[in-house]
Amino acid sequence: MTQTLNLGTASALFSSAERDFAASRGTARLWARDASLWTGTDEADWLGWLDLTDPSPEDVAPLQAIARDAAQEGIRQVVVMGMGGSSLCPDVLAQTFEPAEGHPRVSVLDSTVPEQLTALERTIDWARTWFVVPSKSGGTIEPNSFLAYFYERAREQLGGPPGRHFIAITDPGSSLEARARELGFRSIVPGIPSVGGRFSALTAFGLLPAALQGIDLQDWLARAHPMATDCGPEVPVADNPGAQLGLAIGALAAAGRDKLSVVLSPPLAALGAWLEQLIAESTGKAGLGVVPIDGGFLPESDAAAADSLFVYVRLATAPAPSQDAAIEALLALGAPVVRIEVADPRDLAAEFFRWEFATAVAGAVLGINPFDQPDVESAKQEARSLMDEFEASGGLPETAALLEEDGIEVTADPNLEHVHELEAAIAAHFRRVGRGDYVAINAYLAMSPENQRALSRLRDLLTQRLGVPTSVGFGPRFLHSTGQLHKGGANNGVFLQLTADDPRDLPVPGQAYSFGVLKQAQALGDFAVLSQRGRRALQLHLPAASPAELEALILRVERAIPSRAAERDAPTPTAKETPNHE
Image (cartoon, rainbow, N blue to C red; front, side, top):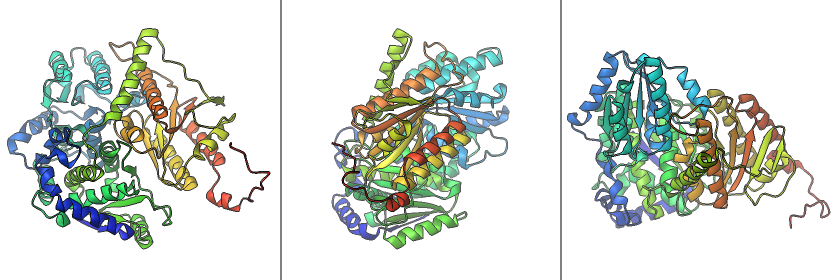
């Protein structure tokens, strides 16, 4: 694995940060758990991830034993039901690696959209499926709701208590640990209290799903260990790959290059969602932040690239020629590019450590605590208050729509100019996009391949028409990821929230609310906090969560936002024709 930095005109910024970090003994202080490297609060309590790459055989033996049991009992599917850091690493592994012979396939559920649960349920052979419930605190509403639903469905399908089909991963003493004992779970695997969720890829939260699909844990961790050594406390900053990457990210973000466009070779594409959470949730606070763009933002001019740093994670055995060409074009523009060459997909274990270390260093450069997530909690609290209102009154509060057209309800933040038509609202909203901004599509829809393709087209359209980086996040998944950045970072995000009615809802056993109500409360809470923080936000509630509705919306957006070529060719308005916005 090699890493090269070609930072072009940003080289001086990086060099200054590198000198300062070396002079302050930053690497040694990080390994010494010196909280003053960041904000001097609780950072020292969250650095257990530094010690995870050199375990003894006894450390991984219990996880390997569970995996052997699954293979011996003919388990063909394992469903990991979590959120954020508890689910994103398993999702990377499930999408990157085929299960080894005789081992089950891992599926990940991290959506409260009823359609998503229904689609997963159709794949389940109940007698040959295990369920893993990962939650550090044990109190997160989504995995607890998943547990309630699938435990009851398994009991119905198997004709008795299904506890032997369930495994918990949770910190010692959590409410989930108590619940798992009560329900007779097959195993309760302890987490490490000093490792936060988004830094937990090399703990049981990532290792147990890896073992279940047949990844050799000793080999996996052995591949991560050299990276930890290369990032060690005595390694000079100039030779430390994690420090170099983190300094580039932090120094350039502090100077205004706060978009991190990540380009991944296709076989490694699943890593992007994990990187999004790690970077956005760690750095997006106190009015600062690094905006990760999964899928890459590859502009064709130096002006469009002016606020971005580009990282190319290239798989040496399967590079994409089009990506190689795009990166060369960026280098020709003088854009800052970090290139990481990966020899084998199994070296993702090392990438997990590299990026965790880099994120901690970037947080030090920015002067923030990279291990907390205060604005994720604010959105949770808003959703919880809405759920309390539902339980008290039997309904969620009505929102005042700006307008309704063709079954699409439009809601906006208070600062959007008053309009009477859907396309006018879309146009007015995106006219507020300026230089230095980014657009985030936040879709509370099922993560079906059809929806993903449609939203990718919408993202590409907005990127092309507006000339700024655009991200796509599925709710409520992104609330535990980029949601922190959206609310706690700089006010340079422009948000499009997409919601829809559910054709079929599903109950949450033992609760007054359903999954549809939970999803709606999370969307309302998200939008409310964005508005409270003065963010530019537009909500479109579609009559149905179908690919056809998304395609129709894309056509409306295409009509509402003129292409840059069309704007250049349009006649200049006379003084009389110029709109008055006073």
